[in-house]
Image (tube, rainbow, N blue to C red; front, side):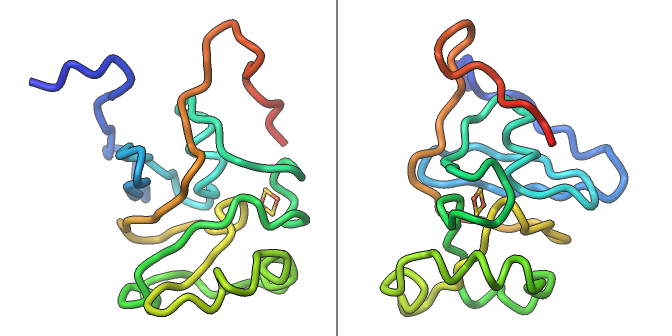
Length: 133
Ligand code: FES
């Protein structure tokens, strides 16, 4: 039995939702249809690394995804393409992975992403919930 108090049951009953496993924290984020991965994660109580707050203007939120699943990802919109230029080049050119912005990526199928720095927001601490846009 899982005794981690931060693990919550994954509700995949919402029509059109998909599940994104975020590693290395090992959390399954349920992403409703037409919702960005970052917003869905924040709604679950996770703090996602960001500077711009989700406007594709900092590149901080980027995730790495196995390039084998790249055909299952929605296309990169011009706004995301612009933001991706802010991700360090070495990361964008890393072999075997594609890099996407979690604030812009609206996944349409279950997948696994890698994002270091994702953590649970502390209740009542300085990491109070961000204002949703
Ligand atoms: S949060 Fe700044 S680019 Fe995604």
